[in-house]
Length: 196
Image: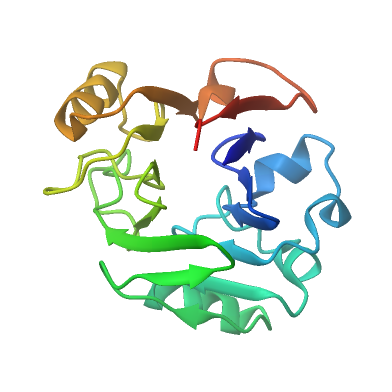
């Protein structure tokens, strides 16, 4: 499995001739990337409906008629935007090519005003790579060797991110998400391999 990081929480994951894309959000496109650069994946996984994870302006051009998966809130938002999507349920596994994907519901971090964020679903891929969306608390009974971890957000702190990672226990490799809030990087890609 090969993971390529784009701005914010946007990842492209390759393996066994299958490509999936997680959270193609507005920050990617505001950074100069074009929708056509992300077209043609086998499937798209959307963690939650915030624009920095699902760009309402570009999502339809990106996904076309390809498979899109998300929780009920995401599916309803996509429908408003003219995009068909498949609703997934907590811990109900599905497959895309050779990838086994397990959705994991976990709360979105609190917003700056203290209110709850939208429903948020993370994705565990092949039991070795977990993307939690904007979740800031590790789910119970979940381990993953590799973790894409948000280190910034409305109420995400570095201390909180470290606690998330420590609670997940078994991780070997950590990929920082939302680091764009600390770095002014334009059109730079980060790559890492999970080793599986």
